[in-house]
Image (cartoon, rainbow, N blue to C red; front, side, top):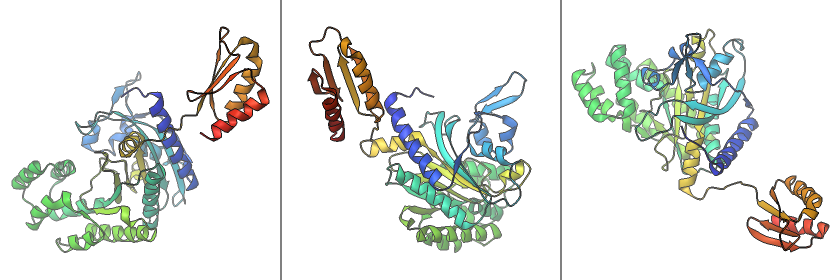
Length: 397
């Protein structure tokens, strides 16, 4: 957790403002869940690895609480009792902090700003594609063009597990190894626990590299024994790809069959956005149709979250970052001009300028005006003409 200084805050607020406006234009409205959740709310839906990264505390009533590690679970809890079965369609977005210990020794942040959304109530490929298209639009809108969006499906890995016949504890162990892309551990695991189908051994070793365009789906299907999970995942990914291609977004897309997410609640398509200027995903998301059922009522849903600090990190490394700090005007004046200077400063502030006023009884001039450190007026003011001069200088930059 770190202190954030003015310039970074200004850039982050600009990025957040762009995203909030974008989400609103797609029909999403803002919600704000609490910063704390009861640990029992999350315990049922997060994996073992993430449980170890949560900030947990005992409150004064003796109950275990935690800082929210993500927004999705909190929003599902909020809406689980408010939606009626088959309700079409709830769209919400959020902007706030999440807290969790870093997953990698190469990342140090435990406090991150997430701006994201949830599309609740409909389960079909067109909704999945719309959510992914909005995620791509978000990256482009904030000024990032050099990125890719990897699309996968939880059914791919689940289908492989069905073919291997591993019990749940071994599946969880293997999932953690594959997610870490720890090839030494993977080879050791497969030596100790050879899969029932021998081709799966070599296929698992290839799994982290199974990334490409739509043709990859057909190539992968030729290497495996078909089962229901595989077939459903392939069909869904193929339809989502076709819709996004019709949207003209194919150049940003990759099929990533080895994609695995931190949270266990995902049930369908999953996706992440990457940039060569960052070692961590800029956005993560997916479909989680079974999560509402944990809280009582089933509702399909799909969403994603962007990491604001990572977006800024990429913007800074890919080129000069636009700083929307207001142009600063300093009015240094003799006390006899106090009323007129205050009136002028209010007029300039109403135009969106940053205005500092400084009383100087010992100055040689009655008034000095600087714009971003550049002197634009000194002497005895003629107020109407001075206003026009300042506005002209502001317009001309």
